[in-house]
Amino acid sequence: IFQIGWASSQVSHLALMPDIAHGKKHRTTLSSVRYGVTVTCNIFVLLALWVLLDTHNRGGGKAVACDMRLRREDKPLFQLLSWAVTAVGILCATGFYLGIPSHPKNTHHNANDGAQEGAEAEAEARAGSPSDNGAGAGGESLQDVLVKWNFFEDPLFWKHGLLYMLSRLMINLNMVYMPLYVQTTMRMQKSSIAIIPLLMYLFSLFGSFLQNKLNHKFGRVVSFTIGGVLQTLGSLSLFVLPRSLSWLMYIVAPLIGLAGTSMLVTVISMTSDFIGKKSSVSAKVFGLYSFSDKLCSGIAVYIIQGCIRCGDCCVNESCCSTFYRWALGLVPLGAALLSFAILLLWRKMKTRKRNKLVREESQLLINPTESYADIKAQKYKMYGALE
Image 1: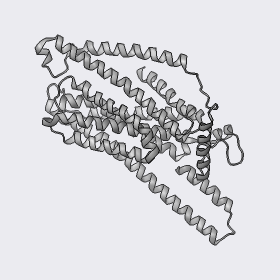
Image 2 (image 1 turned 90 degrees about the vertical axis):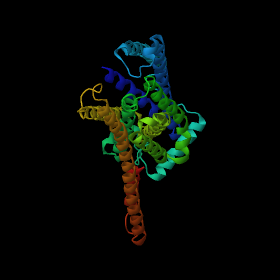
Image 3 (image 1 turned 120 degrees about the vertical axis):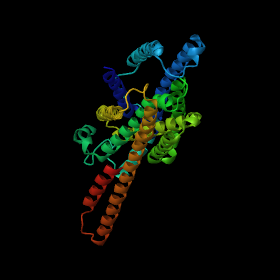
């Protein structure tokens, strides 16, 4: 039930962005603000958990205060936090549905927004990209283009879907296994299960403010690559970090938080660019992406937990200590490296097809009897699949 409600809210919220954004810069800003607010909410939850654990330890006397591990007596704290978060979520959802129109229209832009959107549309038309044009090549209406567009046949749909799924997989596994890594592998204090994720979210919030400028100056691919590099450094650090240097977790955790922000905000902006004005399919695209990321994350967690063969962690702490080091050090690292491989493969395919197009245009100069319309049609189709 929780996953159904969460997916419904998430997909609807993501689907609004292509509908109300006016251009690439607006889409990046909207993605950054959305992710920043999400991170802020998580920060408040972790702050509340930190306060609850600290208050409970001080109220329980010296013996409880020195206890570094979670115990059965801590269960009411998490129940109280869950009910508080649920109540706040219901209030915010009610305000959202009462205050936001069901289908915002983006037809009333100011002059600057209209000029910016027109410039972007003209640039994309010159590049041959059919993603954001309001009419087809033959003067077709936007509705005709929407009916004919099958995003399953568009390579960009699969590229962005894989990148989104891998980014969410990386973030989900980091958040699921980080408390276990902190408690079982690093043997840090009980309050660290709130402090370490809190640092990750604080730097994620800081990184979300930088994404607009970063994407605007360096582009989508470079911004995504920066996040992947940070995740690689963080995962390798978690894999080799000794218990005696557990204080370095307060440096590694912010790197992982910045990596998740950079990758997720950028890939959501890529998807919004891909959808463009075809807002009628935005819910379908984001719905499929959300389903794929939850399915992949669930399968990954199931497989990881199924690999535990040493029994209860309370009995075999050394075994589980090594296991969570491998799980948190290698699986997110694999997701980041696979994202790199997808980007490199895509760039190689793009370069190969562009070189092929140059050769065909050179052939046109040698043999002017060939149809120039055929060459232009092929260029339009090729760049539409690559851009």
